[in-house]
Image 1 (cartoon, rainbow, N blue to C red):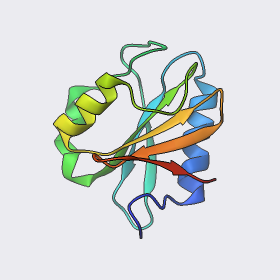
Image 2: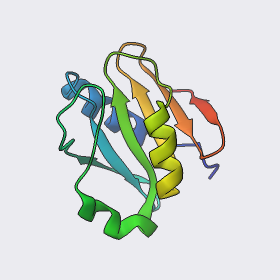
Image 3: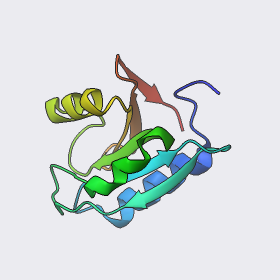
Length: 116
């Protein structure tokens, strides 16, 4: 499986989670199972411009394929904070824009649009 080839089921679950929580940046984990699995998480900041998961989440860092979060009012492109956190954790980000209904995958080097 290519690094940015997410199963349609996972993308649909990410989209549904973002749309159900459209007033904040929703978040979750895409876990390294066969097939990949989406696990919704709580944004402990409950913010529309930032997200954070419980610190204990990263105890399973080796099982995380990507971190998902949404941008409720902006494009699906990593913010400076997204770039910094993704690189610091060494975990790619999958970002969904609620207003444009699209995904971007940041693989720690470049942003790749995801076709759904």
